[in-house]
Image 1 (tube, helix red, strand yellow):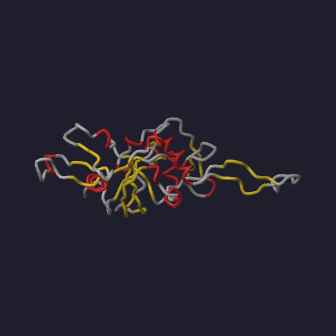
Image 2: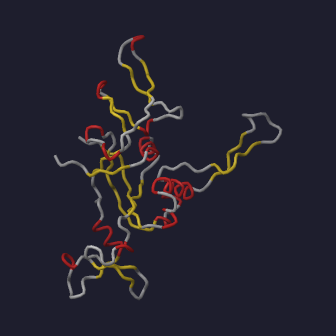
Image 3: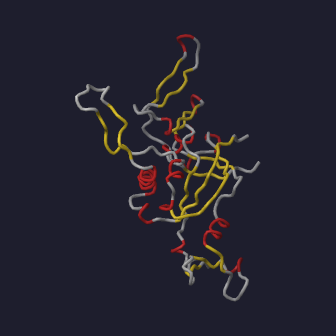
Length: 235
């Protein structure tokens, strides 16, 4: 059986998917269209109506002496790494404990820094343990047998990252940022707590995007593949 395509995701994103809080993700187009000119036979240019279009590689897409013009979004969808229906294996930060036939995942790390795991045994011989991992393996090194999460792609779109809507940002699995705690004056805690003032989902996603891709990444407004998915079982 052909191995599924893979995708590296950060711990917060994996956790959101496992908790059914995320049904979309965005993959940055690399290289960005602005870098295509004169590189590997790819070119791009803007036409009169300001719609950015590209010229396909002349070796494969030539239909006239100047090449065939295709809309950028169409081009990126055609030449992107994924297709609707693809099964994607999610690679994540991990740690092997093959001696005890188990794998730990950083996305499972609690606020106390511990990873819960089952201790085999009956009665007082079993239970739940907590492991503290100090050295995580990079997600790119995860072997197929350690992958626990597979996604089935249901839709792919292309847009600049800053064009994300509030509804789509909420489907990324981000938690809105707390901007200000609200309390009732003169009332003792915890009974004085009101719903805090929070950011929009777009602001929360902007923060996560910069954290994942580096400061200034959101401001650069790159083209992204917007991928909708559902969890899939890999047989």
